[in-house]
Image (cartoon, rainbow, N blue to C red; front, side):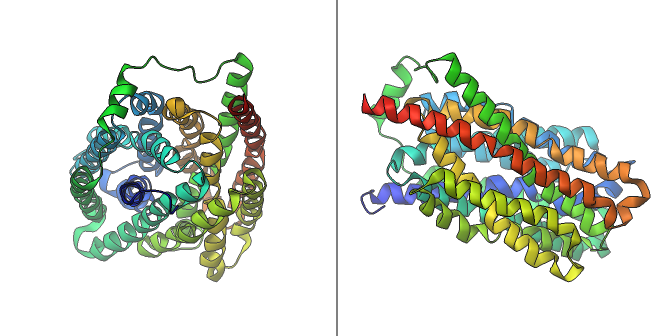
Length: 413
């Protein structure tokens, strides 16, 4: 990356910082489900997990339209405004007096968060065309930090305050994360370098380029996005299902659950840039390898002794989370810069929207277990199902490989 300018390097790290906040908001509620159930008086924990599902639906549903904006307007402004709205929604959640207000707050937060990935991924792919995997892996370190800090801090903070604030203790870390995000959005707007005026004018005035020139390529793209929704479903379920499994079957408290769930994401600080760099020499091979190893660890997780939960999740996170920057790099290499925002936006709208229904589905599945939810054996079929989903998602690599071959042929012509 030595050929890139100082401004581009600074942009890389600033975008990574925004990545951290984006994903803090996705996982901060995971260890707080049972406290939220008590505080709001929910009949079941499914109402609490449904809040995260609602936030993720609001996050993924507008992604294609955010991608259109990312291809036409300043990506820096889109990123700054997105984090500000995301943070304001999360702050409002902390003060929500009832379920409808909480639902409205998480929807606002999700809409704000939807600005991030289409704009950020397209921006980084454009700045680093020759080592896209490594660059996105470095940006992915921000997600790793966010995924780690979110549950570990919220679980610890709420657990420490539970004795004095009772079930309402979950509100304190949520409010603090929201206020920090507001500050971060202002700092990003101040320090991030704006795109060149000529580039912005060109994007605003040029006619929109077609995303894919043939129906066959459209079919391949959509099929690939649907395939990866199975990966996303499994990944997000490991957080929500894992939280309920650890608390109900293993008897973990809120604070310890936050620590253990955070272990999923911490190793990706290393694995994201490592495998991202390695995949620049063989994208499909490295991506398939880490996903298959993660599959085995998902199936193994409910069988390990209580003391092995943290090591197993550390190893799982090391491999599974590394698949994201590699898949994103593969997708960005398959299309020209002019359509990358729209392509990535539609990709995560399809895959992410369906995949992140898992928060609500996991809560409902645990509810249906009845008394078995208090036993380790009751969770075996659920984890086997998640492992199978990751295997199914490997079909998406075949589709992306086809798209990338087409892109290379077009470049040769």
